[in-house]
Length: 260
Image (cartoon, rainbow, N blue to C red; front, side, top):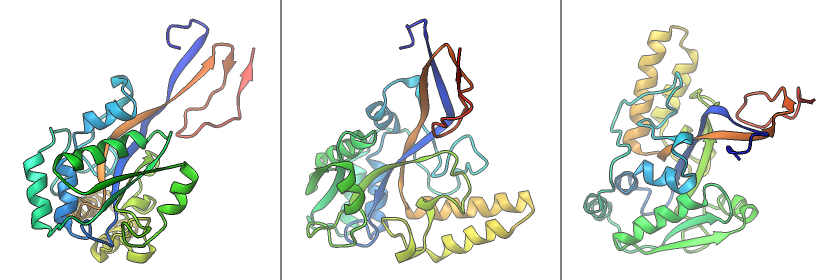
């Protein structure tokens, strides 16, 4: 499409989307932070970004659990990004977490942009000898299944892949860092300190003090591994050159558009 002189290929949202792996915090092994940390040890962001969309012009690695290129960017806490997978470390962390061969169910929404991330993480877990099942289903079934709090192997799940738009840069608006237990987004992390800091950030009017709170919040997110960041991928739109008025946005807005 880039070679077609009649088309415009445009990055419509430079921040793009943050791809993540979300562990289920309710059940073993990922109710133990060491098992969640093992997922980070298995993650090479470049490898994951190439899997979900291999054009290097359209992705970036990110050394933050929040979005790079935004006011929420922070590297406070234990951050590990874009390094080669450390299989020995990951295996040791699972042992320290008390993993006893329980089934690890990775949900895989077929034919979606984040399906390759689910497949790659399942592959990496199998490399260290874990009992992993890649449970492939249509996206609609996946959306329903991820709401289940049942035990993995008995209708529940252990891991999902997902992505979130870069407009969600506000710590209050970003569902993945909600630590409100049963009221949190799927995966249901339970972290009262995260909730206290999110509220403190929202109430603080001084930008300098807000930044201090943000770093404290990021430390909690990173050290507890609420999710595993895989990198950011830009959003692209394509349209004919006789089309004008396309608005830069994380989602496609079908207004303000005209054709000559």
